[in-house]
Image 1 (cartoon, rainbow, N blue to C red):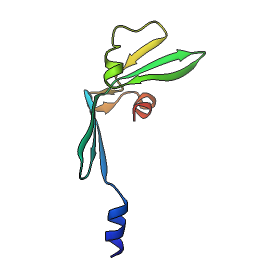
Image 2 (cartoon, rainbow, N blue to C red):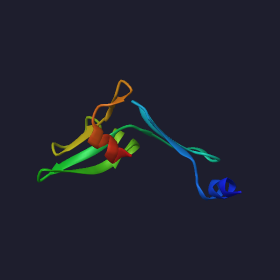
Image 3 (tube, rainbow, N blue to C red):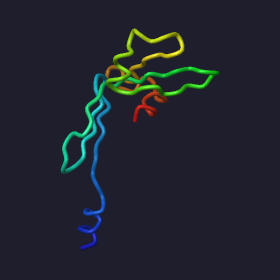
Amino acid sequence: MLSTLFGMLSSDMAIDLGTANTLVYVKGRGIVLNEPSVVAIETRGGRKLVRAVGNEAKEMLGRTPGEIEAIRPMRDGVIADFEVAEAMI
């Protein structure tokens, strides 16, 4: 009985951090997010600020001004930049 109650109050989800795309799956709903694994970071006064994630950040690849950098935090299936991957999640 208790496990049934906990099952009703919780939702199972999974995150797949892929080199190309990041997927979020929610049990009972399927894939609820499928976005490119890209983050746009602005460096201002020594601080790094997230400006865009996913499709919006991918559109910035190769087109950003000097203070904004579009980064792919995953390489060859592993996390290449932990801080940026954490910000993406």
